[in-house]
Length: 163
Image 1 (cartoon, helix red, strand yellow):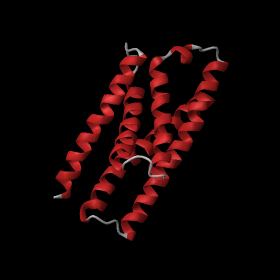
Image 2: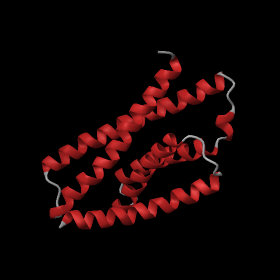
Image 3: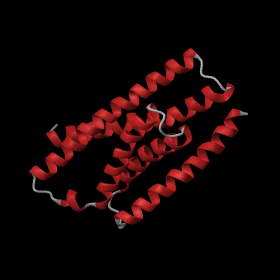
């Protein structure tokens, strides 16, 4: 296994931890808040999940830096002009800023959950999509729209599962 395969493998592991963790977190939150209070057992399970997401974020940070380093060292300057890479990087920055904002209670849970879920899944799906013909503005409009669409869908899901 060469260095690039190791970088890609770590990137995939980080994506699995983050996207899977964000998905599980939504179901945990819905279930925990069903009775309007979070028990010690529910809190412990959520803590394990959030730790998994943070590990995914840390591995993602290292793999993103490593990918940039690798491509630049190979003379692959496309990373500076790939609008898809830049929106994925913006999504990752949003994940980090959102995690801090949620921890500090600077954003409401509904918005923070939507940003996290949309960002992890958005970056994952873009990574799987291959080349796409969109510019950064189109990606950004789609991303912001998706945050609010997902917020609405999560709210509907929470209401449905709370019954």
